[in-house]
Image (cartoon, rainbow, N blue to C red):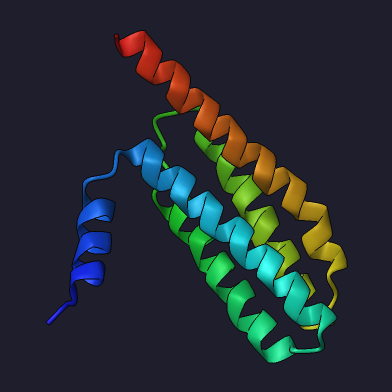
Length: 125
C-alpha cells in the first residue's frame, strides 16, 4: 500500500496539465544531467551512467509522445535524439563535456515550454 506522500505524488502527477508534466520532465532531466556531472567529477561513473540513462528515458518518452500533426514535432524529435546521442557520448566517454554542451539547450527548451504555457493560459482567459 502506498504511504501518504507516495499517494500525493501519484495524484499530483495524474492531475497535472500536459504543459505542467512537460515542464516537470524537463526539470527532472536538468536535475539528472547536473547530478551526472557532479558524479563524473567525483569519479562515480557507475551512478553517473544510471542518471544519464534515466535522462535518456525522459527524452525517449518525450519523443514517443510527440503529436505528429504539428510541424515542429519532427524538429523536436531530432532535438531529443541529439540530446540522447550526446548523453550516450558522455556516458561512454565518461566526459562532462557533452553534458555541458546540451545542458544550456535543455534549459532553454524548458523555459520556452514554460513561457508557452503562460501565454496559453493568458489567452484562454
